Image 1 (cartoon, one colour):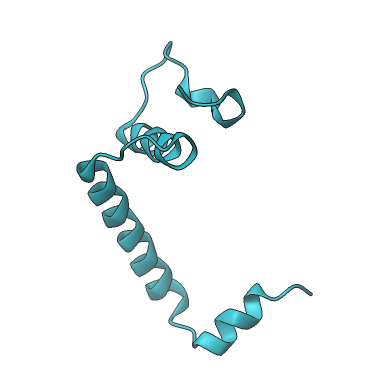
Image 2 (tube, rainbow, N blue to C red):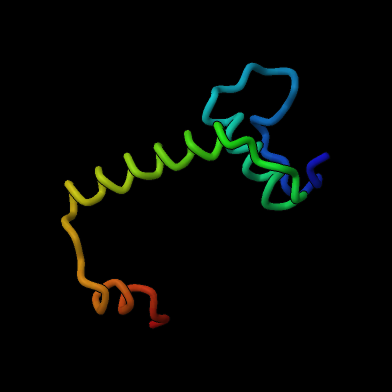
Length: 75
């Protein structure tokens, strides 16, 4: 069972949730409750992440490591 503080409103059993939301819930249970992660869920999440990464690269280009590190620094 997921901790109450980790529950999101869309995780209610009273509403139908999308495949992405189901995957999010599975990943959250894996991360916070150490439940096993279905390899198929991991594959779908990795595919979506790769798609988002590619869209960001196409939109904003690729930045070098030094620039990326500078974005992570506290101001």
